[in-house]
Each structure stands twice: as C-alpha cells, then as structure tokens.
Image 1: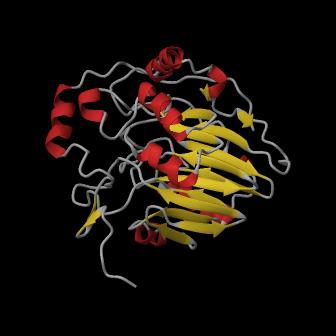
Image 2: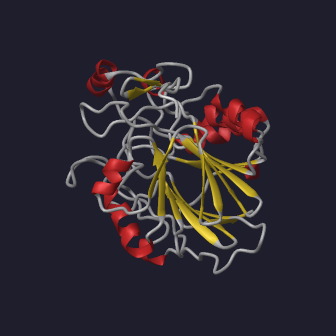
Length: 317
C-alpha cells in the first residue's frame, strides 16, 4: 500500500478536481449580510399519491422522487436511496434552520426493502442523521459515502458503512457503485471544513446505469466521467440553491449548467433535483424550474429528455 496522498487531498483536507473552487467563510458572511432572498410559501401541495412499483422487470429502472436530492431507485432485485432526508429541517439545530415546504413524496414507512443508501457529502441537507438512523433500524442497508464520513455514521449506530475515494467501486446488493468527483466542499461545523470527501455516484444494476451528481458546480468533471465510464442511461442533476451566482456558481449548478452537464455526460435522459423543498439560497421556489424550461428551449432539449419530477411520482425507464 502506498502512503502517497491522492491529488485531491492536502494533509487532512480535500480539494476539488481542478484545485480550490469554493468560497471561504469571508465570502459566506458577505453573502449572509447582503442577501435579498425571494420569499417562499409556508407550504405547497403537489397532490400526488405515491404508487410505488410492486416489482421491477429485468432491465427496467424505476426512479421515484421523494424530495430535494432524495430518490428511490428500484432495479430488478434491489433498491437504493440517494441522500435521504425525511426530517422537517436540515440544520444542526432541530428548532431552526431551513424548513421543508412540502412533505416527502413517499412516507418513510412506505419504502420497499432498501439494500443501499448513497450519501454524497456531509452537509445537513444531504446527510440527515435522524433519517439514516430510521433506515438502519428498518432496513439495515449498506451506507456508501466518501472518505472521512465513516466515524460520524458509526457513532450514530449505522453498522454497514463503506467509505470510498473518487473512482473507487464497491459491489453491494447486486449493484456496483462508483464514487465520482464533484466540485463542492464539506463541513458540519465551523472547524471541519473539507476534512471529509464529497462526490457523486454511478450505479450499475441489471444492465442499467444511473449517475447521481450530489452537490456540484459545473466543470470538466462531467466529460471526464463520460470518457472513463461511458454515458449513463439517466443523469440526476441539481438545478437549485444556486443564487446569487457570484457566490454559488463554483459549487452549485443552476439549470443552464445542468443542461450543459447532461450534454457533457452524453446522457439520453436527465432528471432535476435539489430544488423546491428547502429554502437554502436566494432564488424563489419556482425559479429553478422556470430557468430549466428556458435552458432546455435554448439548447433544443425536449422536456422528456430533462424532466422535472414531482414528489411521489415514479418514472420508469
């Protein structure tokens, strides 16, 4: 075993594929001082009653949007969740912080057997310990995440935790999961910035491939993924928490970036995520979807090629 550090790690901290890209605390506090967020409603209703597939045929993929970055992916013989969040708030404080404006599209008690849970990074809107503990109790799945996150998850009582570096692959529950680079950052407090690794995932199961981007800014990483692993059948890409652009652009794509990312990946289909649930940035609740509509039109992308999911709705591929 070599003691050489990977190129994206310096000492006890990680960095982005093309070097530092994220803003520091000074810029963060400048944003907080000067921000003028558009108002969000207290609550919204989507009116969809989930009807999850009882079974999935060989070679078929069913993707159900739960909320934010949480999807249920069902393959023949297995199911997984991405960045599961069922809590009311995404915050280190239970009574404060961003609060959801709609309930999860699928009740956590209505899930099928979950074999694996993918955790892209340790931000509270992606790594929700309360939800993970409930999943451990009900399903005892494999939890797959980036380097440095195992200690936190094991302290929370999760038994089967697997840490991966970028480009590493693990086979679990009849699936092959590869952890991939993303342009983002990590922290759960004031003094642990970038001490754990962030990323996306490529899942291969029953002949189908799903790319889940996690949180990321736009960059050359999408073309690199396609060159090394081939185009995925479907790409799940973030479009929200993206304003103001001077602050968010390095680490959060907007809709126009996501349309370019889909093209770079060569994915025939894409599905939007990271919008419309938690007020995390300055754009309005409907802004990301409106911008995606404009970006699709500008690039000749049909709505069915880049879908806007409704919580509780299942897309079969």
